[in-house]
Length: 143
Length: 453
View 1 (cartoon, each protein chain N blue to C red):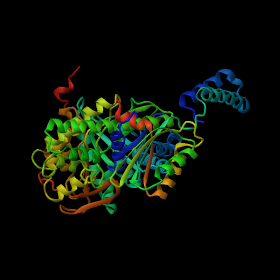
View 2: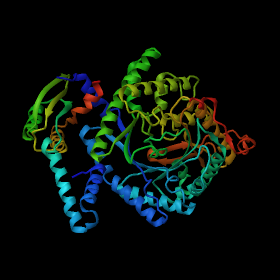
View 3: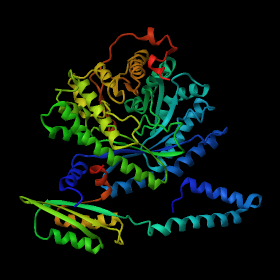
View 4: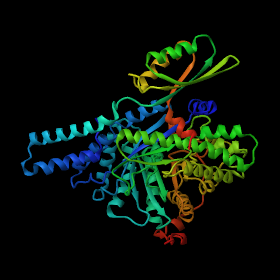
């Protein structure tokens, strides 16, 4: 887990207050462990699983059009338990572009793992697939 | 769909085709609590603190890079100006400190660490004199350490004694590193009005009013601005300014987002976003090319300074609108060796050092990465730097000089470092004596505009 400087300082102060002159290696260890686990619970309880990237991700894909692209991409997303929230695609001559907005909050995989899965699909179909967190687009195009 | 098709494609185009990247995420670390009477204890404290805070810097930045699909070119660290906490040490001991910084930077996997610095615009402490003496050796015996010295400010004037010492230090550094084309000078900057939160190496340091640790981000994107200007076609200057502003706005927003996320991973406060357009030697990533796209035939043509002024102003306006944490240098950089458009202009004989000096009066930095003949006297170098500082104090802006008196080279030769530092054609310097002026020493008093209180 990741403690901030502030938290470390508070734990140290707490240990000093509780133990004073009686401190030895074991008692300090016990106090610190207690304080750390308290913080751990505080952090974890309200926000659920912290490790997982939350929220929406924008998938952009383009390349030469051929049958089966949408099927393969959506199958990969479905295997990763990603929820498709919106989807649009256009064909320009022999090229296609596709944009899918997905929600990965219920996926057991991390964003980087999903990216790896889709890179395999992209290589197989000889197309480009990019996955970027939605925040990037929100910051660049919305005030 | 909450986003337009075009908006999403535009972002993809910026990140994938136009080389939009975040130039640097720089972790500022205070070393003020690392001083001890014993140099060995001091070294150990410095090393441990940098490794403790900076150990995950590269890892965190890589994770954020992946999450947003925008690359972060450089991950770096800046420290408190070394001369402040370690004021009691001698020149030899300062060199030891520089080596410790070098070792810590290698341990955490970064290419440069900056803040081997001193602020001597008004005068020296004894320790600062020792520090200035240590610079040539420190830069010779380390690879990753960058040094900057502030010798002038609008409030204090120009410390000509310090400036003369720095001119000597530049010459000495060039000679010490002659085997590697005087590369030491590429890591040494003399400043006027140095910003305390600049994330860009080599001039970065962790200012003394900054918190314990802070994360600053420097965005980039000359390639994106260049393409936007080209696509705008034949519009008038007001509209052109609008095009630049719109583009830089997006760059800044993306930069701030990524900087904040890296800071969050570290669990440290986010400092500022520096909205500078910083070129690289890569094709198309050039301020020189932007100026040409704006309409001048080559960099150095009459009108260049006006075009640069307009570009710089548009960048600042867009940045201010996009973020409330704008800081650092925030403007356009015009380093010669790191910008293909500039290099070509020098090689064609269209860009002189005097024109560059004029350009520095309207852009965010100064004479940057300019190679000059190795036999240029120290007093002439001091004269060039004094001119830069004068522009800075009178216009109340940051100016700087990173000059490379390339040892043994003459006009027409080239120093080629490869990589990010690029290659610099040796430029002609007027062979006139400045010693009668700079040799007087003392301090040029602070200008009238320092009296603002």
